[in-house]
Every structure is written in C-alpha cells, then in structure tokens.
Length: 68
Image 1 (tube, rainbow, N blue to C red):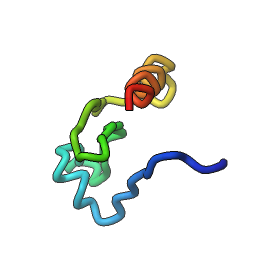
Image 2 (image 1 turned 120 degrees about the horizontal axis):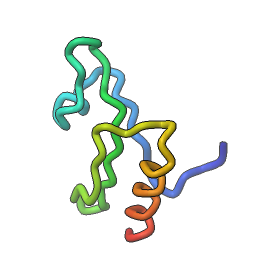
Image 3 (image 1 turned 30 degrees about the vertical axis):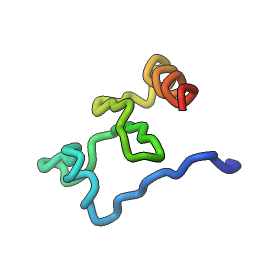
Image 4 (image 1 turned 60 degrees about the vertical axis):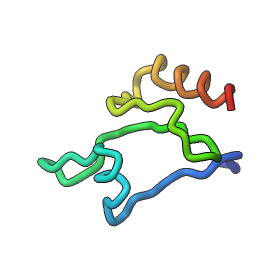
C-alpha cells in the first residue's frame, strides 16, 4: 500500500467518533466520514456522508489535501 504523508485515525474505542458527532448509535459504529485537519488542528474539510463508490467524494478530499 505504501506510506502516506499524513496520519490516519482508527478509533477502536469510539471516543473520537462520538466527539466528532459521527457515531451511529443504532449500529454502534462510526458513519463513514472524512475530515481534513491542519497541523494546527483546524478542520478545513468534512464529509460525514462519504460514499466509497462515489468518485466526486474522493476528488473533493484530494482537492482539499492539495491546499495544505
């Protein structure tokens, strides 16, 4: 897979998903979501309805990442 020039989050204990309001209480899982956060901690992009099969959702993330 290679390396990425930025960290990814895995939230095993669901702490962050609850803090970011993307926890699905019904299914007890996180909603598929993407957040772009600067090194200063500023959220510059969020999509809490991210669709893995939707090309436009990926393109929007890459556009935002290119701004960093």
